[in-house]
Length: 401
Image (tube, rainbow, N blue to C red; front, top):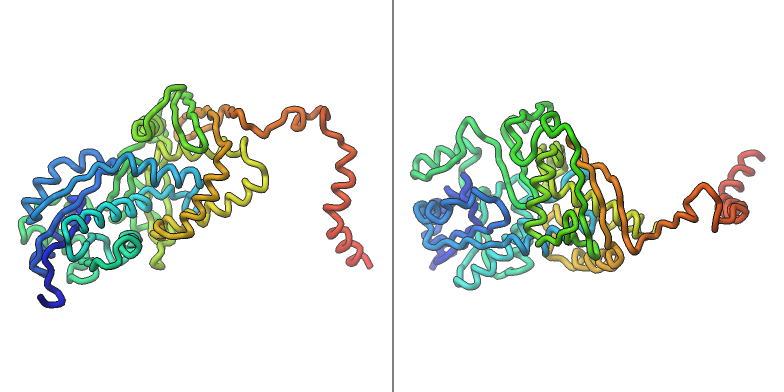
């Protein structure tokens, strides 16, 4: 067997344009069986007919795995507890789905005794890094095939031409060149007219959210309950993780909440522009942040903001399976011990407005915060200010002299 010869390759398969043409390409290039693996992380109708399509395109076997619950509990909720948002806007929907898909792909590769794993990520994007860093951590012995770094297909137009030549059915066309990724947490839109940062997205682009202008004219109130930082209930009723996210997506989307138009710094160096819809995630992030404001002390709150930024970078950069991410999780979990309670939000025309928050572990003391002095002795402030301001006083005296 030559260096390029292989018996089996497990492909991370979505049924989109890129992975659809990769199946015949792998068979031609390497003379191997191709096992297609699709993970259900909440993409819905996109999974319909996927098995038949993969087999028709040349796959020898197809795995379709329901990963929705572990996606929420093992990836979404830890990131939510960390408060991780990349560059202030992006709630990381695609970023933390990749390490889960890669993990299951590796498990199947070992079960099938495959020689390699493959993905359909382009050579310019972040996802190639996310998949391959997961492979390196979980199965360093497997060979990795990244067709976009090997073949002579240079654009989506080239890919469409290859699909026609090999009779591969695809949904993309020259008239619809947006690249989308959908899961339980969000849907992303990239490519096409969005490559011009001066182009305002048309309303037809959006899938999960209604236009704020066309959202209901009356606000809706919802109450989200948390236990140790994990959302567990909606409007007083306990909800399973997947159902909770789905219902919050519906509510947020109805009221035009969760849109983000982002020019972001990719890990590989260039800037890119994406439009994200994360309605349920936006509501959860807002509620969780507000409950933390009630339950965490000042020093922990301020330091956790630093951790949140670093955590977001790790997720975005594909460094999920790293000791640092695990260590940050340990820190975050300690901070969440008292983050239990409820937050009431008012949903109105694109806005999630905090209406109320309550916790048995609240650090808010009315007798201290009130304008009436109560338990607070204002005379204590004088000595505090003198000591706290001593360095500035010395600087002032120096300048005066």
